Image (cartoon, rainbow, N blue to C red; front, side, top):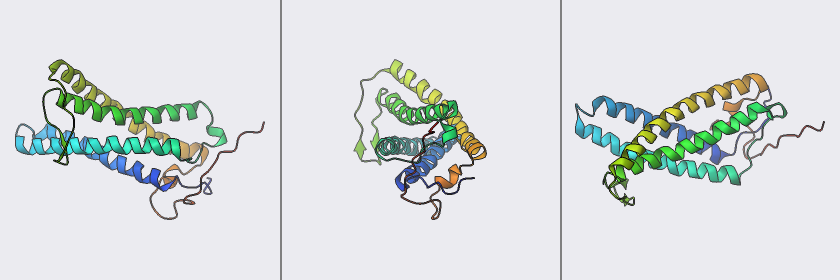
Length: 196
């Protein structure tokens, strides 16, 4: 195992785990609302409001992560990882980012096209949309379908991190950890290119 590899830059690690917490909260809220919406409509409505707010912050966190990803050099792949597995990993990351952006947008379109006024933290209004129930249905189906795909991608992403650890000996979770001593903080790793 290569313990000398540095941690990812701190902003990337913070946004990664913030996104994990927010997404877990969103799935929990959606499940909770499905269970209690009919029995306790007021509580269900409150869960929906919290869900909307968390979704908005997932959207912002994802934009910030993308900005950092293009603006900050993180640890590169190992020499052995520059293969089809590396291409697969990049594809999964791309799909994760796409899903994290698409789900909040679809949720917004679903509600706004039904005439609901959406306010973030109860104060900041989002722009309205023309009333369009057919668009709302498409957005609802997109929101649910992409959420299920995202869940599968998250499982694949976690499994791949464990596999990467096992095959390449690179402690991915340690490098993404928020704990002090998780790696050489602030030092950026550049993968060596195969000279052959």
